[in-house]
Image (cartoon, rainbow, N blue to C red; front, side, top):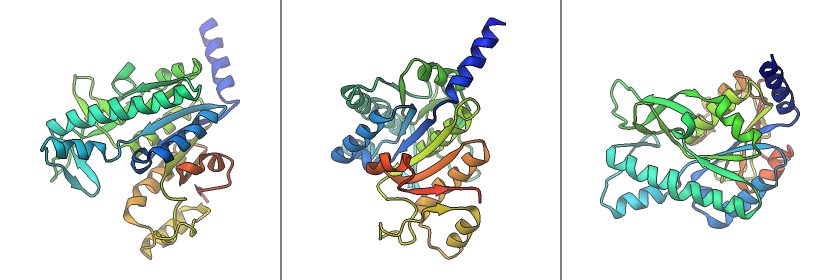
Length: 276
């Protein structure tokens, strides 16, 4: 009875302030100045927060220097055994710990994690009828209690896009998808806002003009823009993930520029993805 009452108090307390699940794009990770600006904004958030990151271009550069050929299909990396070693070293190693170290310098107590740590994210090797993606993982479960434990301790989880299959195999998993699945799972006990932050100011009517931000986007307008080919291919998976998150209980989804994170949270920047 005592444990149940404590759980109910924890859930009530969690609902009192939002949880921001923030995905940071690879192009920002590659830019030291932009990354520092973004992390200053993250550190200033006086609420629950989780950062999910990709790896930028460093993995490709390291693979090239080692003579390991990289294959991409529709923007997705084919992850053979040697590439898996590289992305694990880069994503879960250097990139993750660099972000953690910078946040610690800003008095934000961060903890760097992968899906394998504390069994946070279980996945399975992707199955496709015609393409062998190698060691690419599709998510099965996210451990809400495990992540909540870190948040309740006042820690900011920094999650690299490496998962595992609970059979000893690491898997390379899309960071946008990880952010979406974490946001969906955590929405059971938290008021979750999912933020996709990258180099653009939001969803743009003209991909080459950063001033053409669409302030709000619903499914009907999204369908029109796709039919008119006004949304570029790289944005479509993000928006599809955004609507899937809203359908699963996430309170708000915003897509915007990483350096404008403060304004995104204040509702003054970016594109809000809405039901209607």
